[in-house]
Image (cartoon, rainbow, N blue to C red; front, side, top):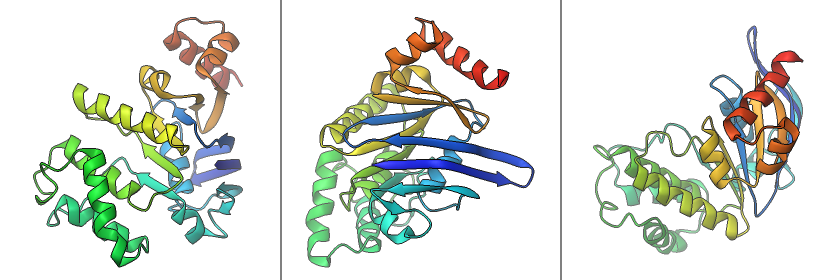
Amino acid sequence: MIRVEGIHKSFGKVHAVRGLSFDALDGRITGLLGPNGAGKSTTLRILCTLLRPDEGTASIDGADVVADSHGARRRIGSLPHDSGLYPRLTARENIAYYARLCGLDKGLIEDRVDGIVKTLEIGDFADRRAKGFSHGQRTKVALGRALVHDPGNLLLDEPTAGLDVIATRSLRELILKLKDEGRCVLFSSHVMQEVAALCDDICIMAAGRIAIHDSVDGIRQRTGCDDLEEAFLAALALVEDD
């Protein structure tokens, strides 16, 4: 479970996150939906312990991201917007290296990596160097790194950005499988249709704040809009009018 309570984060005069609070529950997919600049990526970076909030608290399965950053990191798998693979390492080596960083026992790493390669269906390129991989291949390997230590919580920053239709469908199926395993999945997107197709709960964000946090049907009811795109725009207007 991920809990965010009243976090603020500024960069100079830019107030990127303004008093954000929400819970992302185990066995559910929670989406952070909003336009560019809404504060989605900043929120995920705070949860990944890459940034410290100026105010407020956040925790991963009870581990505070500031006071117990190591404990929080052990409980998450993160897929950043930029996959950041080591180009001279193979896909298998990239995943194994991250397993070592996460402190997995050396005797377990080979079997764990083999399992990830099978689960993600990357055997065709598992032993190729990452340099020259397609965007979809890089995303799958980066997701493999995020899963190799078997975390209970997944943080995905626009995971389908730049993927083709087939790769997007495959990734969506995997995200749903992770949910069915009881994991907490939190991901950001600016595409309403994508979030609606996957999420149990949606946090619509604008200007660093949450406009609405509800299910798809709940958002329709609260905005009075049957069309999801219209509901999204109506929710953004609530923040603009505040």
